[in-house]
Length: 438
Image (cartoon, rainbow, N blue to C red; front, side, top):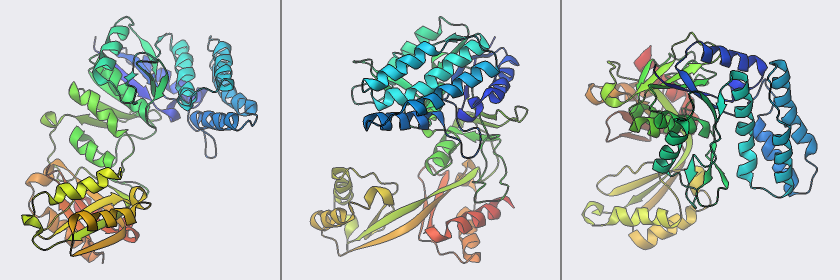
């Protein structure tokens, strides 16, 4: 029998109705043996996610504001699921422990992790699976960096003892201290990927509230087509540029073991979703796989005559950003110019410092700053061997009356990055999509 790891997001475990769907999905395929769950998400517009409520409890406690009523809202959510589905599990000791930890000044990471912790205990009892805590299994060093190989070893050893198990997403612990440490938001995707690698799964199914990836953001493009197949490399490009169905860091553990990811819809389990595979197995004769973008960015351009002959020029420029703790997104260059493209939020409080340091270290002829730039990524394996891609993009934008501020093809040859003014972002995305799809 094969092994499938399945991860269910917050919308899939939001209430008893959704959890009943989850159980039906799992029981329909005996290969779905390891289940990773998020904390319950919103049940309707205006509702609150459990994790957000827990953060609010912590904030109240830190300011000596009574938080018990908020915590009661949290426990009532779990109790309602328990009674609606007639789940035989006692959560009272867990509730008392959370309150005791809150009163003793526990860490924010501990509080944030309890949503997944309670969710996993509840789902394990509902399914009749073992509960396996990720504390002491997903390991971080003292600086909060994931210890990937030690995590893989710990998870492999523990999960080999369980034929079927439910595992909480989102958190692990610091190796040296056992202190709870959470991954970034969306980290349950990463947990699922780590578990899939640890058990050498045949596939990692990521169940959410959409039927896979779409070729563009439906908030920007009307009724975009679904993506049936995509490579890890393409997904990484789209995730980085704003596509948010799957946490971008979730790709790496399964990619190491050549495990496909299948993004599925809990509310429409008959839909095949999107299959994500390694590049060498990926076959698609389409030029375009998807379009994604984000904003705003700031472009700082340094002009200096004979820049290309000056050894170490780029290194000195990037050292300025490193010293200020600023990361860059792109560095398009010309013979006598160098541009750094930076997310505006990262540079807005340091812009004067960056310019002063560039003047001091680089002695440029001129520096210009262009704010409010949107970047759009056109991604697809077919871009690398298709004639006229850039021409099609530029024509589409010209016909729409949109000025291009930057155009750059990545060295991987699977993406083209277009920079436009932020006010033109939606119109530009729609124009490019129509040029390739319609």
